[in-house]
Image 1 (cartoon, helix red, strand yellow):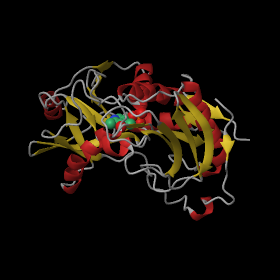
Image 2 (image 1 turned 90 degrees about the vertical axis):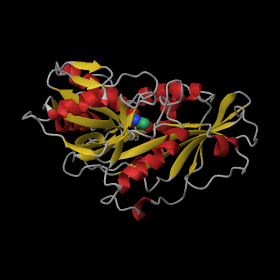
Image 3 (image 1 turned 180 degrees about the vertical axis):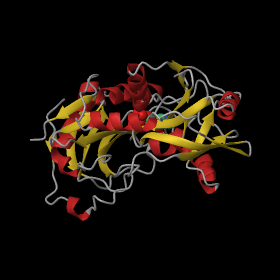
Length: 357
Ligand SMILES: *Cc1c(COP(=O)(O)O)cnc(C)c1O
């Protein structure tokens, strides 16, 4: 990468933010990292103050959604070190999203170095509380102004950060899901595996309807038969049955979560039988009735692990019991937080320590 130009603000806004009352990404840190794709190259790496950007109204991405994003977190450990959790995995997923959306990908090394540089400037924004983090949101958008439906020839990358609170102050609390059997999130051959704007726009209406009915998230079913469980809101989902732990396979319609991969690795490490296989909603409802289902949880960067307490399907509500088993979700939550904060050995090379001086 070319040398990064730094245009820094004079006075940080950090002191105006109450770090004891952090929501999810409501405040942005002082700076953004930006680059432009121009004449076939990512160039002009720049760290500049966070603030409004100028785009023409005819900018293609605003009309046709040619954009991709990522989400990952940086942590400040009790040892004072700054750690980013699995940025290489996010870089690889960004590449896959870019390829699907005709966006020039970013090298993994460039992605990681850009984040390092930004953290060196804004590391004071990393909250220190357990469960808190600095959320990192890379975004690439088509920036050429044209209304022809074709891939843009110009793009911009922005990496912004935002201090976020722990989702759960006292460990995970159980969420209620509505099984969505009308709208779908993604279809075979579509863009479900890509972190791209349109998928989220399409999920807003069912999400809002579920919230109005008193649920936190939607449980998505497959687009063809409305039978196979896919994921939950913006999280992947795992079911702990008596004999095995099941999660839907990555067949292109679900988002390949980094947390999903991390949790599967930790479960296998515990010697548990983990299977990536299709699970139908009827099998799930039967397993609740017969107490075969011991636990279900969503997994994603934002909440890490979100245990599920209640599921509504076709007008019936099902309470999830624990079948008398010690739940795994709180243990997984603690294990991942410990690795992220450097309080447990990083056996899988998941953590990138950034020297912030
Ligand atoms: C980002 C995302 C996830 C979770 O991925 P992580 O890498 O674990 O954060 C799951 N589902 C959807 C739809 C997502 O956008």
